[in-house]
Amino acid sequence: MPLNRDKVVEVCDAYIAAMSSHDADRIVALFSPTATHEEPIDTPVRHGHDEIRAFVAKHTHMGFTLTRMGPVTVVGNRGAFQVRVDIPTPDGTRAVTATDMITVGDDGLISGIVVLPDAQAVPE
Image (cartoon, rainbow, N blue to C red; front, side, top):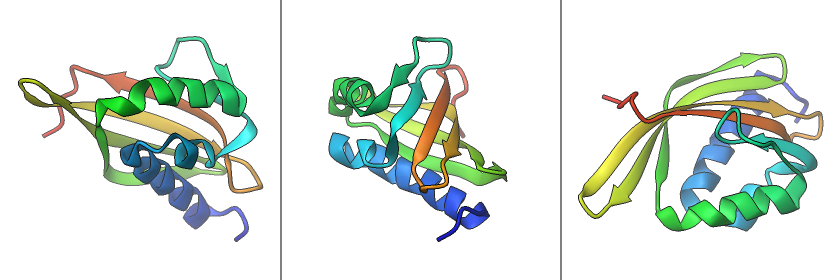
């Protein structure tokens, strides 16, 4: 499928599903080998599959789930969306909001992602 709005939305939704699966291989497979990953924003950027896998592997044990809130906003090859992140804790589930911006390459893989988590933006 050529890169268009539908493809960008498809990649964003595949990322949300992969993150909720807690499967590092499934997550990393969505990224190009030279992708950048900045999560959270203003932290050192990870480059490529090995660095992205190392980051993801540190967090998949948390058992969180992501649910998209609202539409994906698409401009060119970029998609931005908000997700509700439900994180299980000993005291019950904690919900926070994150805004993600994904850049999709011509190959249909994620070439870059920036994540803006906001622990104080509690979703309704």
